[in-house]
Amino acid sequence: MSMSLTLDAKATAKAWIDDHQQELSDWHQHIWNLAEPAWREYESSRWYVELLRQYGFEVEAGSAGMPTAFAAQWTNGPAQGEEGAGPVIASYAEYDAVPGNNQAATTSESPREGLGSHAPGHTDPHSVLGISTLAGLLATQHAMREHNIHGTLKYTGEPAEKMHGSKVVHGLRGYYDGIDAMVSFHPFYMLPLCNTARWDTQCGAYYSKVYTFVCDEPETWQLSNNPNSPIPASHSAARAPGANVALMQMYTASRVMQDAMLPSFGGWSLSDAILSSGQATADNLPARVAQIQYSWRTPDIEMAEHVLKVLDRNAEHAAAMSHCRLEVTWVARSRPGITNHVLAQTLYDNLAEIGAPQYGDAAIEAAQRIQRELGIEPMSKPYLDECEALITPQDAEAALREHLAPWQRNWTSDDYVEMTHYAPTVRFYISRPALKPAAERGAYPAWVMNALGGIPAAIDPTIDVAGKTVATTFIDLLTKPEIVAEAKREFAERRSTFDVEPLLPSDFEAPIDLAWPEYINNSARSPERQWLP
Image (cartoon, rainbow, N blue to C red):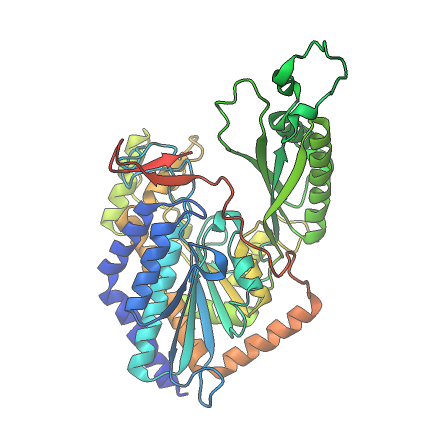
């Protein structure tokens, strides 16, 4: 196809985003205020499904057995497999929020109206992730229609990203099969990865597993043949240690042994969460069920497996000590990512044409009000300089490597890495608003970045730049077959040196039924949604 077609289509796509700026901002406010937690994003996913159908996409709601996931597709020109069909290009939305981070879009610490401070809120924010890629998707669709560009757009809704919940499942079920190129976006969350694309150092392995201790035969604990046993009648069951004891044994043993799992380098981490199962009224019986979730990030699979062995062994012994049986449930088990220089450079070239986000007077004023609220002298330029500047993928890679061991090929974790094993994938970051630290004051409290993620003047520039970057990159891929061919050649070459099969079985089902935080409607108490911790 001609260069003029590519340039004209890019101009058309960028103009669509300019013309829909207010609508995109309103859409983001809606998702940001829904702020639904992992696996419970019912209203958020429903909104995406309905809107995509309005724009002509075929949408499967509840894809891969996940109620809050979806898979959408739209084709212009011949269908796949027919003569003249264009490439298949994909991206995705995320929309899960984080419990305990409820913050209003204000310049002071305050929860959203009608909800307590322990309700979820968007932190990264995934709300802007989804609306940005949606903007790029719809702008590309518009340009394809206007300029008769053939190809297929695929777009998935990925719930529970904070638990790496859905992408591994979509991958196992074949939803990424046949994709020619994938574009993965995330608002910036750590320097130097701001307004750039990842180059060589992709995210690493991530494992997450729930250990459930079940004491379902407490009456068999320490049985006695003596009819005059000092432990009378049915209350003998109360002497069984029970599930809570097993959980505490597991928790303390794993905490104490954390330093023995792996050497203290390589940027690995282990976190835990005790899941609530509601047994507060069992006043004279041992706890029947207790659950603890462990999640760990490591540079490679071998390190992740070392941690797994220790945790599994601790759980088995904790159960045996406490008269419980053990059940295990995988939440996620993902492989390190595979890079693609062809796509990274293509995307960054488009980003360089668009430029980094810039913050106007209203955004600066909001930041200054926050600084006054915290007793900080307002700055004339309150946002980090890096938020309004570009850095090439190569320079970002060099800066990142300064802090990593020479042997360490991967750093931190994100579940986009599973996609990189199915199709050539580029991962890029656009700044979200972050403030310059004041001298001798340290970091800002968490609510500040959460609030800035919901203040339109501060967060809308991210949507604008990220959306245009997705759209212009998509158009390059749709109109320049040589880029797709070279990206696929690189993908095949890299896969041949890192051919790791999925770490979960093909019939793995997402753990949607565990005791994840919930919303309910309770009109007897309040018409507002109620938060169940």
